[in-house]
Image 1 (cartoon, rainbow, N blue to C red):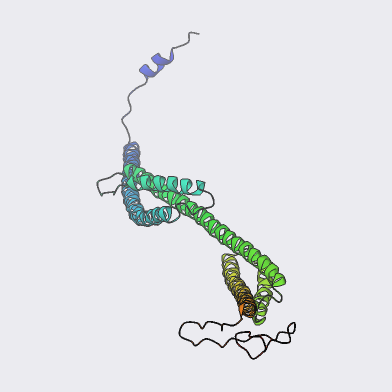
Image 2: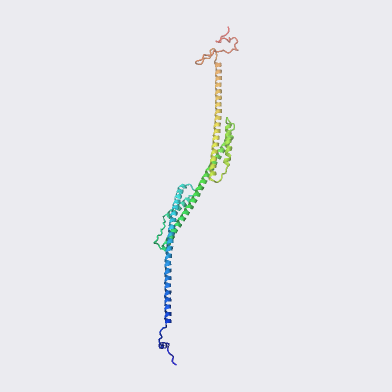
Length: 332
C-alpha cells in the first residue's frame, strides 16, 4: 500500500464555502483584537501623559524649594556679615589684651573664611527649568547654605575662645595688680613697725605714734587677705591694699615729722642753753677782768651810758692806807 503525501491529500480535498457562523466568529475575533490594541494604546498614552504631568509637578516643587533655599541663604548671609563685623571689632578690642595671642590669629582666620563664603552666590530657579536642572539648583543652594552655617559656627566658636582668653588676661592683670599692691603694703607696714618701735620717747606728742599704730593694725588683715580668683575680688584687694598703704604712709610721714620737730626743739633748746652759758661765762670773765683792772680810775662807761664809780678794795696788807681815799693816799 502506497502512502499518500499529506500535501496531496489536502490538495485533493474539495472546497467548502464558509458558513455564517464561521464568518460571525471571525468578525468577533477581529473586534476583540482591535479593542485590545486600543486599550494598549490608551494605556501607554495615559502612562506617558501621567509621567509628563508628574515631572512637571515635581519640577515646580523643586523650583519652589530651590528658591526657598536661596531666600534662606540671603538671610544667612546677613547673619554672617553681622557676625563678621562683630568679630572684626573684637580683633581691635582684644589686641594686646589676651592671655594667648594665638586665639586672635584663629579669630582672624575665621573672619577671612567667613568673608569668602559671602562671595558664594545661590541661583534662582525659573519656570523654564526642567526637574533635573531644578534638582541641581537645590543641591547648589543647599551647599552654599551649609557652608554659611559652618562659617558662622566657626566664627562664633573663635570669638568665644578669644573672649575667654581676654577674660583670662583681665583676671591675670587684676591679680598682678592686687599682688603688687599687697607687696607694697607689706613693705610700708614693715617700715612702719620699725619706725614705731624706734621712736618711743622721740616725739613731743605720743598721739602721733599711736596714730601710726592704728594704721598698722588696720592694714594687717588687708595684707594677710587671700582674695578669690575673680576680677572683682582682685580689684577689691588692690583697692583695699592701696588705701591701707596710703594710711600707713601718711602715719609714717606724720611720725617722721614729729621726730624731726622733737629733735629740732631739743637742738634749739640745747643751742639756747649753750648760748646762755657762753654769755654767762663771758659776763663772768668780764666781771673778773674789771675787778682785776679796777683801781683809782673808775670803770669807763659804755657809749651812751655814764661810767660806774671806781672802788678800791680794802688794803689788808698796809693798814695805814685810808680805804676811803680814791687815790690810794697814805695816812700821815
